[in-house]
Amino acid sequence: MSKHRNLLVYVLTTALAMQLACGGGGLPSLRGGGGNGEGTTTTGGARPAPHFKPGFNIFSPEQDIQMGRQSAQQIAQQVPLLQDEQIVNYVRGLGNKLADKAPGFDFTYQFNVIATKDINAFALPGGYIFVNAGAIAAAKNEGELAGVIAHEITHVALRHGTNQASKAYIAQKGLGIIEAITGGRETDLGQAVGAIGGLGANALFLKFGRTAEQQADLEGARILAAAGYDPRDMANFFKTLEQQGGGQRVPEFLSDHPDPGNRIAAINEALPGLGASRNPVRDSEQFKQVRARLTGGGTGRALTSSDKPARTGPRDPNDIESSARPAPPIAEVRQYQSRDGSFAFEFPANWDGLVADETNMIFAPKGAYGEYQQSLMVTHGIFIGAVAPGGNDLAAATEAFVRQQLESNPDFRVARRPAAINFNGQQGYVTIVAGPSPVTGAVEIDAIYTTATADGRLFYLIAMAPEDEYPAYQPSFERIINSIRLAR
Ligand SMILES: [Zn+2]
Image (tube, rainbow, N blue to C red; front, side, top):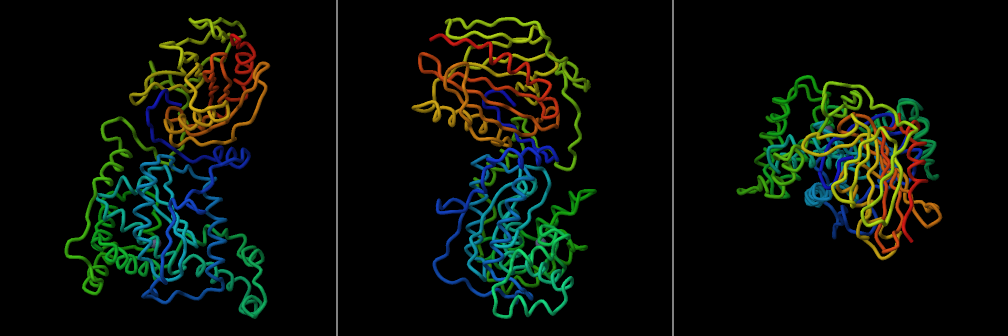
């Protein structure tokens, strides 16, 4: 984790992250649903019909929502969702503005940002749309980003995902089954999805044919125009991608489009009929801010690519090429006594103490801390200190503290919600957060222990180590915790 409020955007997906997410429970639910108004779109009247006839479909729009939600939840456990509110709220605002112009069934469109560098976006049935941070960073202006989102919205509106699933289902089961499904009795969704089975619903939902892609471009261009954007910005983004394209995985909105030139021509051809504004929105101050926030804007932040999860091993900041792990904690201990006498604890004698003030101290082995991209980073060790409480009771102060940590490390997420513990004889909590370490490239586990001091401050200890080394460090963390003495 980075110390203090340094914002670092760095993320990758690994099998470990998946395991952790699945085993740990307590994942942040997909935001945007429910009645909080955030990220949702509700339209007053009926939506206009799409200009393309939605393809053959054995599912109902309600089943699109049901299946899309299942897929979206699965995906949310497998990819790092960006937690940066400014960026995510911006994308939701833009997405909602465009979704208001979507034709067809009145789906509740929901937008989330995936914290990876990939230039991609995708849509699941029922309105679940994911935009990769890399697509935001690659867009030259708001219009280009709007183009990507409008394209994805169209896949939802035209129900391309369940159209694909329908075709696969029929291919597998034969036509006879259609009658069973459509012939009066309730559709057994589980059975239908199960039959699609081996292929994996997500794979089906995410790869469309050329006709579907052409429709997504043209209906998307129409949405763009209706929302006040220049449809040609969608085409411009394809050009941008062409230029950057070499060697990358083919993003969704480039799949089945061997020639971006044709897409641009098709949009230009359709242009006169789209009713585009003479003074379209091209860019916004907000977009520039969000883009700068993602691309670093001189603050040293950077995105890492999810398809290069190579572990480089913890690095000694003094020897950046070294991939040696820090020496394991030794049994011998030293003691730290706070200046005001309010707390004391023991730590492994081969760890260094970095103590500026007692609200945020670091104890870590050599090779596990150092400056990295202009932030002080720690890969193994503890943060410890006592701070003013951010709430009226320990539970509230703990929530506030954890939230603050996640704000400083936006791609970390809560892997296990605060659980009450006995903290050396008094009430305490432990919360587990996890995320990708920008230094090691591995998933890092942070256990956040909290309790109250006698004078009402929040005392915390964050124990951190890479996921694969955490078990080896656990006994040392426990020894430290058991040694903590708080003045009463
Ligand atoms: Zn597409």
